[in-house]
Length: 199
Image (cartoon, rainbow, N blue to C red; front, side):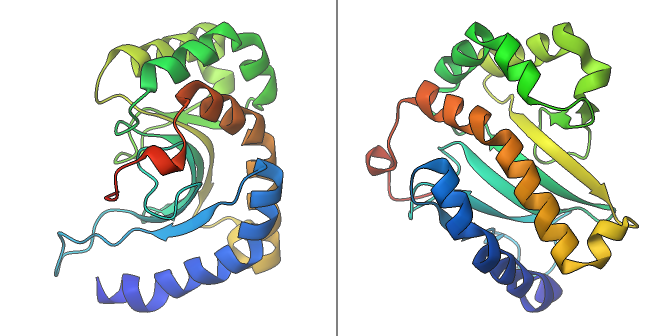
């Protein structure tokens, strides 16, 4: 935990300073930085840690949001729709109604995960149209199901050896995912002002 707080979280703040304003402009709304606190952990580090950008100052879990984080063997860049979202079914219906545009917006090498706590993810190209449809339907129908779309960058990638290369990759990823973010926001129909104070 000490290493996360002293080494990783300051990097998250640096990344935020480079990306947040630009991302807010592209989203058409002010986005705010949230860094995972892992409040229930005192000694043992979690298997992953992350930062997120959401439209609420108070939290991110109940809103569509962008995540940058890492496991021990990869960095992930996600558009994250996690199980705390109050209007999951509406978001899923919005995606299913516009599935062709959803699929055309996502490159074949982008990944889809259904659980933010696990490394498991499948490439869109491997899933095919029917696999993506099933994942969105599961997100709609299963209370704990999630939908995370984006990129996984392996620990040895040259992209992670250069701050500028990483920022460029993050910008490109979130720009690609922005139409899906905006669809999710429309489907959610919940403004950040309507959310409870806790996150």
